[in-house]
Image 1 (spheres, helix red, strand yellow):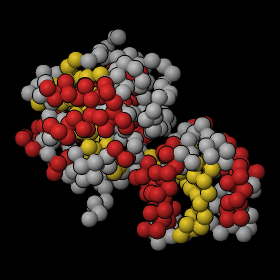
Image 2 (cartoon, rainbow, N blue to C red):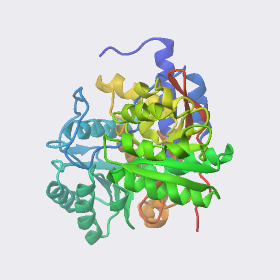
Image 3 (cartoon, helix red, strand yellow):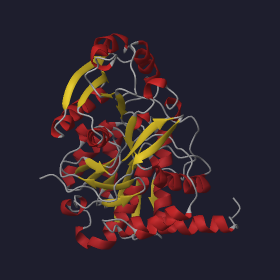
Image 4 (tube, rainbow, N blue to C red):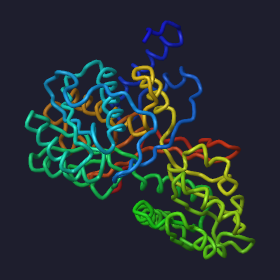
Length: 420
């Protein structure tokens, strides 16, 4: 690949290095350099949503990601860090891209004093157990990965016995625990953010249409909790079998449709593939998004949904796009392909390990260090780990209108004070 020679390419290279250094420095309250980098770059293209990676056999990106290599090592520093990913078997395409992202992070961190011990978990719990054992045998002090829930559990069992922490990439919050932290796009913070925004905008009565899935179960609990915490009320909740929302919409119509509607917001935590059927059922029932505002999670951040009549004026919470857009451009320049959305997790995990090893010496991966309440700056905004292993993120709120999703409430630079 030819070296970039234009002034714009030189600027992109400089601002990428600045952004990486900001993440490494972890100023815990933001980074002036990242602001300068955002102002220096032009408008960013709309990107894919931070969709959940399946924790069971399922889909993979259509275009294959070129791998930077298989199992092995990245770097030759004194601090050894395990990177456990599915490089073969289920999830191998995503795993290869995450390895690429780890290589990019290492290079942009100016080759920190790390050795990344890359191990293939073969997309299975047994593979994750064996990969983690091998990495720990080689001296790893922390485990980054795996990707799937069962694999995180298997790796955590091994790491816990050795007294080492795990930073997993699964979206299943049930695998989080003390010493097992999830650096992933968890749905609960998205539910909190979008409901809090609705209440701040005057919404007081919430209805919900929730699919009968594991994801639906998780978000329903979060939805009920945050509505109550914000002093609002749940007017009605209807569940429906995946792919068959019609009867549930009819039952809910008295609350969300017509002049007698008692709800002023409707929460629908549905995927981009299934949302058109839900939207059609709502339109058929006489639902008006101008009267009752639709609310969703980051699963809505998909351009194919932005023209649906039932979602006009609807809002959802998701990470700020700018950081990932910049990361994606650098990844494409290096590896010649668009990274899957979760690739940024591996990038952030490696930069975090590098930064903590530089700043905290022997306490670099201690629980108190990893659960610092001020949080850390990453590609997708500020994040922090809770003592229970779950993560919190700064999220923006987007509104769907005129075939686009426009930010109406930016992601905060600093996370709120942790609850006691």
